[in-house]
Each structure stands twice: as C-alpha cells, then as structure tokens.
Image 1 (spheres, helix red, strand yellow):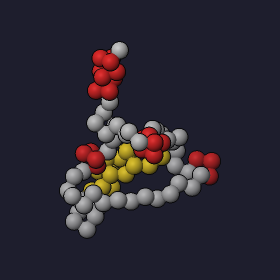
Image 2 (cartoon, rainbow, N blue to C red):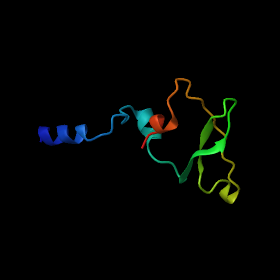
Image 3 (cartoon, rainbow, N blue to C red):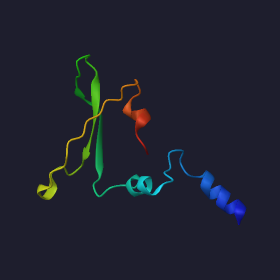
Image 4 (cartoon, one colour):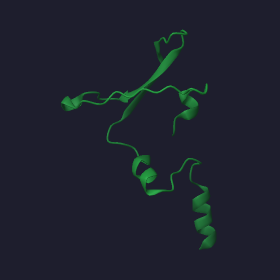
Length: 83
C-alpha cells in the first residue's frame, strides 16, 4: 500500500499544488482557452506576443477582465505556461 501511494505521488507534474488555495485555482476554469502564439505584432522592440483568451469571448454578454503580464526574465510563455 505504501509503495502504491509513493508511485501515485511521483506521477504528479512538478508544479502540482499542495496547499488548499493552490488546489482551488489549479484546475481548468469554465471557459475553453484559445492560445494564439506570435499572432500579433509588436512591442517597442518589434517582438511578437502571445494571446490567451476565452474561445467564446463575450458569449452571453459576459465581460471578461483584461489581464496583461511581462515575463521580465527573458523566458517565453512556452516555458512559463502550465499544461
């Protein structure tokens, strides 16, 4: 039994949450997300950016908030996004 639980723990992804608040927000939300990688241009350096947005943006009049972020340490969203 101990071996079986050790195997299950080792199968979790490296970023798996362990605390209640992390577990609350870890799961998928109610909207399917569309990711447009390098779809738009450009920032002040001419670099493209990636867009993450609800696939059915504005469906039934829902007003989604706009969130922005900058990585600041040179990684790309492909490195920072969670699967």
